[in-house]
Length: 256
Image (tube, rainbow, N blue to C red; front, side, top):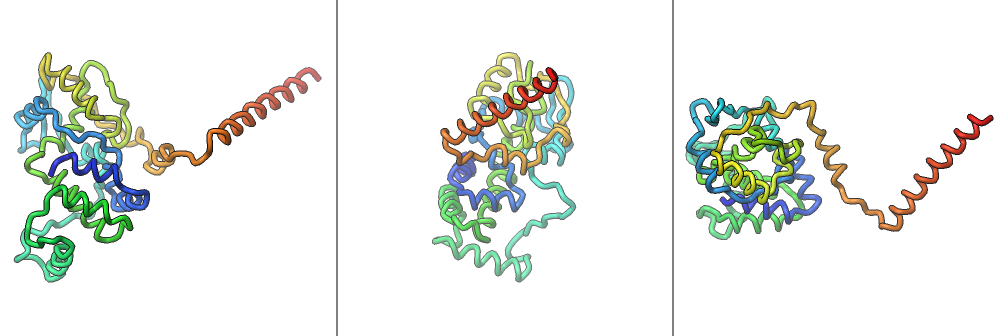
C-alpha cells in the first residue's frame, strides 16, 4: 500500500473520525505530511540497515532504532500489552474466524486482497467512526505502513531524519517527531546529503520525553478559533486597555 493512501485518509477524516483515531492510540499519524519515498535516500537506508541489530550504519557510528524511537517518531503506544497477530485463518480461534468473516462481508469481492484505493474510500465513508472504521484504519496502517514489505524503508526514514542532523537542524523537534516534515523538506534534505554522501550527519539522542508536549495540549493549540476577526480584534483591544489602566493605577499609587 502506498504512503499516499494514508495521507489521503488523514486529509479526509472528519472531527469524529480523528477523535477515534486518537482514542485507538494512532493519533500521531494525524500529523503525517510525508507521502513520498526519496529514491536515493531510500536505497541508502535499505543497504545500510542491519536487521540483526536493528540499526543503521552511519559514517561515524550506528543509529540503533528502538521501541522508544518508534514511540517518539510515530507516537505509537509502547505499553505492557502484547498484540498477538493471527498467523492464518485455519490455525486461528473461532472468535477470530467469526470476526474475519464479518470483516470480509463489507467488501464486494470477499476473497481478494483489497486494493489501497478501495480501502481509502471505505475508511473515509465510515463517517460515524464506529467499530468497522477502527478496524479498517488499523488494518490499513499496520499492513500498509508498519508491516509493509514493499515500503519498509519509510518505517525508519523519519527516525533517521530526526536523529541524524545534517549541518544544522532545519525542522523543529516536536512530539511526535514526524511533525514538521513535509515532502519538500525531505526532498531538500536528500539533495543536500546526496552531494557529500548519506549518513555523515551528527547523531543526536532521541527526543527526551520531558521535552514533548502533551497530546491534549498540542491538539488544543492547533484547534482553529471560531471567533470572527471583529470579535478577536475587540478582545485584543480590551486586553490592551486593561493593561494600560493597570499601569495608570500603579503610577497613581507611586505618585501618592
